[in-house]
Amino acid sequence: MTATTSNQECALKWCNEAGEHRTHRQYVTSVVAGRGRWMLGVNLVESETGRRQIELTAVPRHGPSVVLDLQPDEAEAIGDSLVEAATRQAHASA
Ligand SMILES: [Zn+2]
Image (tube, rainbow, N blue to C red; front, side, top):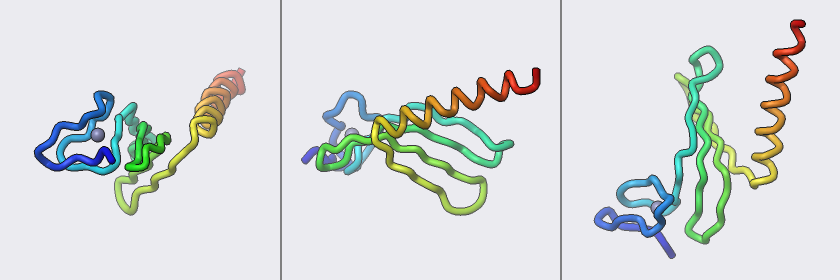
């Protein structure tokens, strides 16, 4: 078990969490999106059991947040699709 107490430094060098935490997390990116109404975040997380996932968070200006835990292949598929759609959008107006 790699959970920390408030007085410990996290043993995982890649972890960005401070203070007591059970889930290790590296904040990869956060982007304001949807006309400023959402904050989207992508994090690498590792649970107490050592299971690593990609976490996609969507935090609205008002209301509850949404958190999706993704397998690496799922995250890649979504990322590739976003790039593909953005590329198509850029060419669609031509
Ligand atoms: Zn940690």
